[in-house]
Length: 223
Image (cartoon, rainbow, N blue to C red):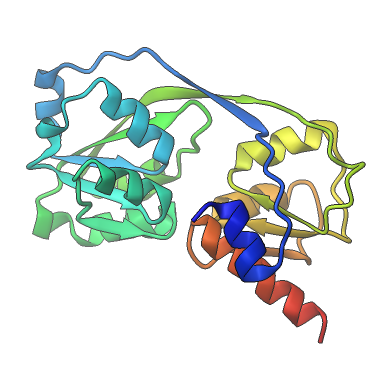
């Protein structure tokens, strides 16, 4: 179901979608020989899955360990019949599970397709445990500030730290609004800009979970 329709029919929300970032493909070189040298691949965004696999034969990943964030990232892999062996709701948990399963899955060398604004959290978690880590930039995120302060939104859903940065260039944060963050990293970025008393982290990194978090927050605030 379309997320705007779902918001209206299941929660009674009038959802307006605004893109505060622009994504474009980055030219990159990754030969079959290079790909074969990695035993594991980590994906932490749906965009990374899309742009990486545009130029890569997915058969080269068939026998590899694949790690992914839950939600849209995992769903993009499943659409391509690539089933992650490890999934987690956020990058820190994903890194911990990779370390925990290092021996079982014989994880030695990880390739992490990323965007230019991806934070180095996964690198920090997995390095120092005898595993080799390499990132590969496959897309660029550009900020796209849009003024929305004149619109009386009761809540704003943020899907990435970069969206928060972009929002800040054209708008002010208000303690009267509810902010729903897709994950811990996005929530942490929000703390740079405003009091997060009215901010909530979704239980899972999906639009549906964000809508549920908003519904529960509004229901709790009315008590």
